[in-house]
Image (cartoon, one colour):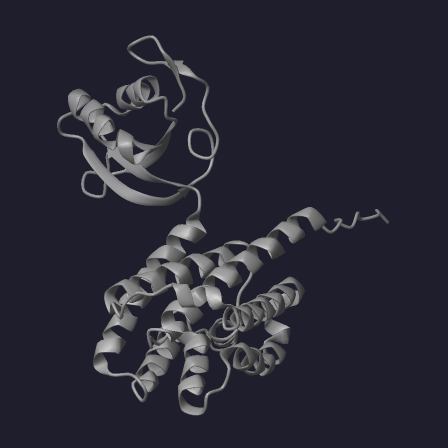
Length: 305
């Protein structure tokens, strides 16, 4: 029987992830205490529930965050997996500790927005989104609605997005028991900014544009894109649905700043080419997450793309 090597635990990576989850929790907690609570803005998910409990019965969110998540973590024990369970417990503890710290540090009092709810809504979304994005990007969660959504997805086949949206709607509607419509509208602004910042933080790497090019000059177009933009190109075998003619489709990923030049190259070779351009949220590899070999520009100066 062949002996199977057991993979060693990667402590350096784990320590780095825990540090970044801690940083994310500190940022998220700061925004919640210094912006949301101070300006009477609500929040979605389990964090929103802690704010409701604070408004109704003056429960400290630092403690209610921990108390509410304990039964959820126990319930989700069999669904999260060992690593997921550890990271969820750590993320919950980090957020609870962060809320406890920021409520007792006078530094949060210096962030005076002069009752400008628009700025408060934007800042709440930025702090919350960036902090949560860091937590998610490095494998952590803060428990709460994420655990509920995960269980329902595995047990009932309900997509996580639908469950999270339903929970947010219920929590925000309940928040109207202590908020007026004006503050709720700025809370919705915060939620929008939050979602955009979370996406940007989680993606982390360089965004790009993907191009699908259908043309009778596919080989010439690919060659020119590689020569002028120094971007790789891939041929995809395709067949037309109407005439069933076979041709090569060119797939190429470029930086947003190169998109105009790429279209000019294509149109010059084939004015009738069909181009489909889509957003590439993350591009990993040469020219995006590490540099390509230095080339010379028109002035003869060396440069890196």
